[in-house]
Image (cartoon, rainbow, N blue to C red; front, side, top):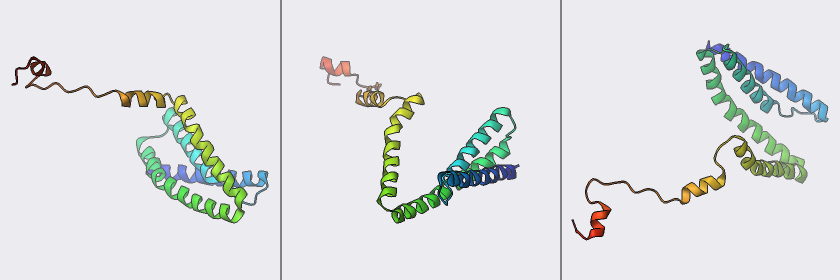
Length: 151
């Protein structure tokens, strides 16, 4: 059953590469545009849909998770290296576009965290500024020290 996870991953990769090539043709670039990213998105969508409908058993899901854990970092690292080489060869406009995309992504992090329902940065700061509650000890109580018992 683990092989089905590999088959799902391979199918998503082939579909993503095909869509990336098609997108490159539509944009007018002689390259694959976002094929690896599209493959990862397809893998997430298909595995989630199969999980919801009950067609993804545990062994297949483990296969998808295993290969995703290996596939994603390796392919992203390879794609990032190619993108950097292409950007440096492409000149300042390509580098500026890359820096702009990263900057925009950083600016969208708070927006996406609010959509996700997590705590806002203000809530995190408020929680961090509250001093911790001291633990109650079984021996000398702070009230005993205030009375001056000295014990």
